[in-house]
Image (cartoon, rainbow, N blue to C red; front, side):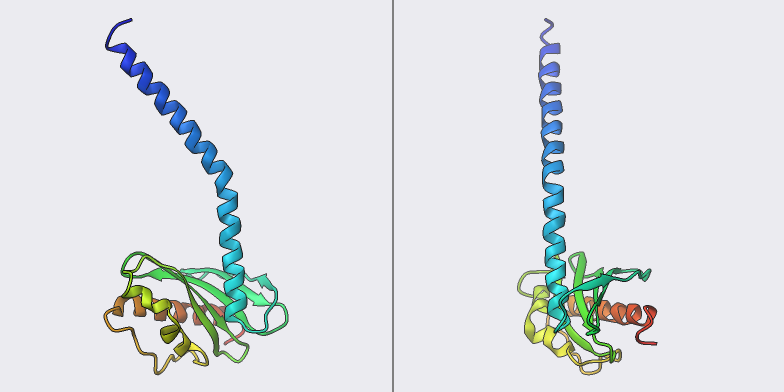
Length: 170
């Protein structure tokens, strides 16, 4: 065999085997990851809408609104919303009661700077949203994390847009 052909054949076989293993790993783990993400999302919905036990998905076509769940017992809505933060995608869950006031807000996922932007997920920041209406008056940003704080506030604003579009805040 030509000395130039052998390394090419060996590398080609290694690439084919590696690609097949990577594809098989993806096929096995993708459903598990999706199931874990759904479980986390469901738990967050129940957390931001006190008294809720189950939700019905509601269609919403507002940009940045990933999902809307209406509590089956009438306690409100949960909105999973995404915007751009300092480090990339920034996702939160917002609960809004039938009275148009926030029942809870939770940071779901972010790529913000640890110790700065990630502080927007701490109760000191998120708890100030409870009881607020769409005006969001009196919200204080996190010092040193203005971009992240503003991303959270924009997400809450999108949740109120979605709340109005599903017919409950108009």
